[in-house]
Amino acid sequence: MLISMWKKLALVGLTATALVATAAEKPNVVIVATGGTIAGAGASTANSAVYQSAKVKVDQLIVAVPELTNVANVRGEQIFAIGSESFTNDRLLELGKRISALSKQADVDGIVITHGTDTLEETAYFLNLTVHTDKPIVVVGSMRPSTAMSADGVLNLYDAVVVAGSPDAKGKGVLVTMNDQIDSGRDITKAVNIKTSAFSSQWGPLGMVVEGKNYWFRAPVKRHTTQSEFDIDKINQLAPVEIVYAYGNVPPTLYEAAAAGGAKAIIHAGVGNGGMGKWLVPTLQNIRQQGVQIIRAARVPNGIVIRNADQPDDKYDWVVAHDLNPQKARILASIALTQTNSSQELQRIFWEY
Ligand code: DGL
Image (cartoon, rainbow, N blue to C red; front, side, top):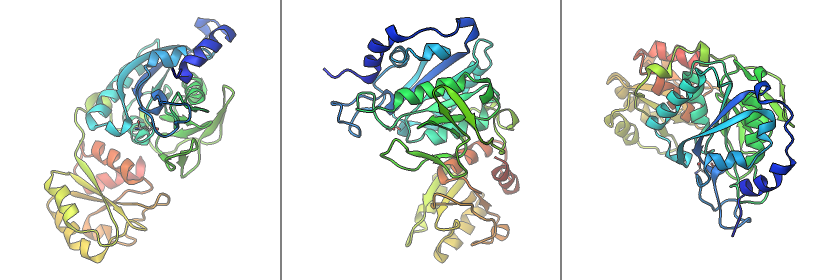
């Protein structure tokens, strides 16, 4: 029978572990588990891509890495056991409210969230925008299941607990630890779907975590957590926002369908600088006149969509997504539109967050 990496490590590590600090000296870190590959299991050690996610429970994850007890007093909570492609708005709200409640507890110094990598960037940005705390919140996943050779989940989790328990990680917004890097949950995106170096941030990582020590190089300047005007404790429903991916020959009917489906905003995942074919413009103007916000993002992975370049946004009363990719733009718009329906306000929010 295949023994998962988590179990093997538990067998070897428990005897090797030496406590380096007393419980009172160590930070209290809660690991909130949602599923994903970090809790995945495959049929053989050679299966790094074919496996089932969300099979291993959080208590097994913790027991399997006894080194965690050297750096923190750790306890686990299993909030979901899903692949992250199944995250919905309701799940985001439920997770956010739980993280907010935990962050208010005096006996919690930091929080780690284990998560599938596919939509990790959306959850991390959502929490970054809505949870009012300066305590470290770290979202972590892995690219290989726990049963695979060279599984990456153990070190990613260890790094996450180190960062979540570190006073120097306070006030930096929601963080992500993957592949020895510490990235901002705002900036990070899944850029490769098969390598352990799957994640990148267009403006670079904030730092590195190596052998249980953090090395910081920059800090986020966009509003987040304690400086955010959005508060998860007061949000009970997100606004419906849809994304339409542009390409040569994209039909206007896709945008019309999104509007007819009740979208309060449509994220146009545009070509180049959020651009579009001439034939789309009258349709998008018409949809805007019906009260639906049009937000120009780009399907190009890096760069900034410049207002009034490519399309006259002032004239059409459209919004640009700044440097946010379409899926992050959806998260921000679906929160912002719970509080305003003004395009000027929405644009301000896109500049500031
Ligand atoms: N289904 C994917 C998810 O939970 C597994 C991929 C992963 O976690 O890397 O996002």
